[in-house]
Structure formats: C-alpha cells, structure tokens
Length: 281
Image (tube, rainbow, N blue to C red):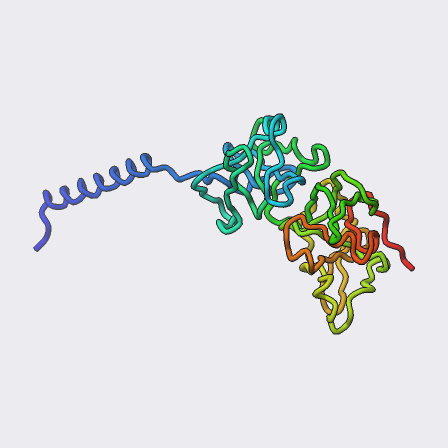
C-alpha cells in the first residue's frame, strides 16, 4: 500500500524537527577548547594555555621544583589547570602537578613547571624567550635544554662552571628530562675517545644517544654547534665538537651534577655556550 499524502508529510515534519533538535544540541555543547595545545609562533610550535598564550620553562627548575617566587612569580605567572584537556600531539603522561613551596599548585610538562610571561599580550607572542638566558618557550620536542643551578660533585663539594670549587649557579646543558650532559676532556672534535668497542664502560658514562634528526634547541644556543656522530654503532649528539654523555652515578636524577668532580674536576665538565670548541688533535 502506498503511503498517504498525510503520512509522507508527517514523516517529513518529524525529520525536520530531528534536524532542528540536533542543531540546538550542538549549539548548547560547542566543541571543547583544549587547556593546553600546540600553537604556532615565530619560534615554531610551542605549548600554549589560556587564549593561546605561550607557556615557558625556567632553567632553574631543572630538578622539577619551582624556583620562581615573589616578584619572579609576578612576572612569570604560574600555569595550573586541575583537569587538563589536551590538543592534538600532546600526551597526558607528560603532564603532572606539583605543590610549590608557597602552597600553590602548578602544572608541569616532562617535569618542567609551566609559566606564562606577563609581557605576552596575545596568542603567538614569545617575548619571554631567552630572558636572562634562563627562560625558554615550552616545546614538546627539545633535544637539549638549559639548566641553571649550583654544581655539586660526587665528592659533595660545590663547583663553578670553570671547574673550581665555589658557590654560584652555573648554566649547563641537559636533555629534555633535565638529565645533565657532560663532555670528556680527552675527546677530539667529533671523535669519541672514551667508549670502548665492547661498551664495557658505557654504563659509567653512557653515550647520549639521539635520532639522526636533531630536535628543537633553545634559541640561546646556536643550532649549528650541534651535530651527530656514529660512535660504536650508536648515534651520539655532539656540541661544539664535544661528544655528549650522561654520568651513570647521577642515576637519571634531574639536575644531578656528580660527574663534575670525577675522577677530578675538569675531566668531565658540563658545557654551555661559553665552552671552547673541541680540539681537532
């Protein structure tokens, strides 16, 4: 039996009502804007928070605690969100929450506390980059980062960047998780002279292995100073010709610098932009 004119019309009206109801529902529940996303800036893709504003890392926070308080906190407002929603390309496992010394909570990324910069006024601003040589835009794929803290050797003594005993913060390279990187004084330019072919000493001073493609580098450092070499079958990152290593006794602890005194100061120094170029011979 063919449907009547009235039944066809009724079906059409019901379908139209369904479309209207769905449309209203969409308007009542707009697409959620992520709390943290990857935003485009003049410095490439960076982590962004409210209103698309750039988030930052502080070199002094290498140990995973916030060292920005008082007037610093006024200039660099803390970022915190209790129940994070994330944009494409970000993993929940990289984010965590810490409780600061002042009792406030703060969101971290790969262990680095996150901040805004008060002079950034809109999405895409990156005016905080390299302020004081210790602030870095937050990126998801740094190959190296900068740390700033007192160097303390395996002997428990305090050292300065020039490998002498003394107090004061030093600037030095770490990996993206804040683990200190070292050079070996006996290495030559882009030549690893330490690691044995059988890797029997690699556990003591592990090679800093990277992929053949170097990721992001803080703008305070010259990207051209970085390259990779093949050492005992591993791809090792070098800086100014110095092959880079971890120190096994640091046990992967963020900001630990025990290697600066082993076996004596100057044999395994940390490095930064003031380090000399590795010798060719």
